[in-house]
Amino acid sequence: MRPALQDLRQSVQSVTQMFNSLLDLSKIELGAQPVKLQPVALDPLMADIATLFREEALARNIALRVRGSRGKALVSADPLLLRQSMVNLMQNALRYTQRGGVLMAVRRRGGQWQFEVWDTGVGIAEADQQRVYSPFFRPEHAWRIDNAGHGLGLAVVARCADLMGASQGLNSREGLGSRFWLRLPAARSASAVPRCATAWP
Image (cartoon, rainbow, N blue to C red; front, side, top):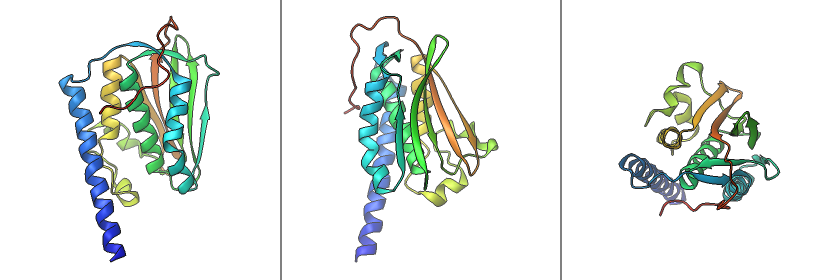
């Protein structure tokens, strides 16, 4: 019975994940989560997300590293939309990395801060790199690695970025890994900076 129970458990997790992603996307599209731009410190948020995924990375023998800004990175963003985007990018990186590691990093880009997620995963073919932001699109090789995804995570990231006035993109080489990034305006004030933000209920 164990194989059958394991298949059932995976199926339930897959469906639950799909509904959660659809709920996130629908909330964004319907404006159920109003956009509230404010100063957000990236380093504490990155530490929070690293804690969230550390056990999964350890269980799969994937190195998880964080390269912060020593407290300097302060961006203008909606805390909930930003956290949702960062979580989705990390989840995506871990899902398609079978060996090696995943790195979260932040770096200054003129008057902006760029949050990045690097992985040593399967990478994305050049022809598919713009399509990965479309809802329900997944490259063919992605299905062979993990059938739990439904092609919604990156669509949520793209929509969150649009709502916050941020830019986003990726660099990838098939078979060698990927780098996804979000670029946000630097905040001018350190007042009322949330240390972290909880996910939507």
